[in-house]
Amino acid sequence: MNKIHRPSHYYFDDKIYFLTARNINKTRFFDGEEKKYILKNIIKEAADVLEIKIYAWIILDNHYHLLIYIPNGKNLPIFIKNINGKSSFLLNKIENLKDRKIWSNYWDTCIRNEKDFWMRFNYIHQNCIKHKHADLMNQYKFSSYNDWVEKNGVEWVNDVFEKYAIIDFTPSGDI
Image 1 (tube, rainbow, N blue to C red):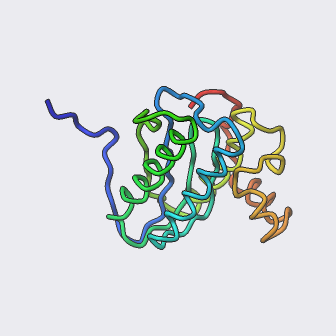
Image 2: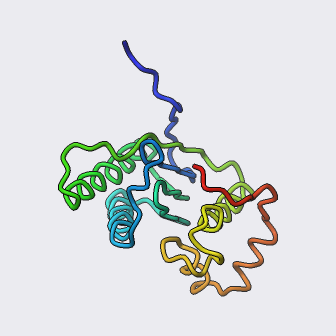
């Protein structure tokens, strides 16, 4: 029996994508700083190799979100495979386990317009509050929020959050 891949993936060149990858059964495999640093470095390495620009990112205990520009759409599944495969291998090695499945599936969405981009940007950075990892975004180490503050200033970041507010954002422990 052949399974149909859900969700369907469409790979387009020269597009910005919002990506989410979740651990299998929502298990919190990345529950410590060391594990999150490993995943962060793997994401950066995979992006560098495939010339993918990362606009925004966040790593939580059981999932991550990325906002990326990908010049060659066929590299998107390779990018995800590199991240999820290498992180699974290293995490299993650290925990002295073999062939344990870490990742469930991933979801990708092409960004439609400027508003969509900034709403996803804001959603990514507010995810640490949504999942109760921090009370304020600047308290959370594993996102690009502080990079943007350092680059453009807190006033600029606050303006983006105000101009493209996420109206239906509610704290939650689910993903």
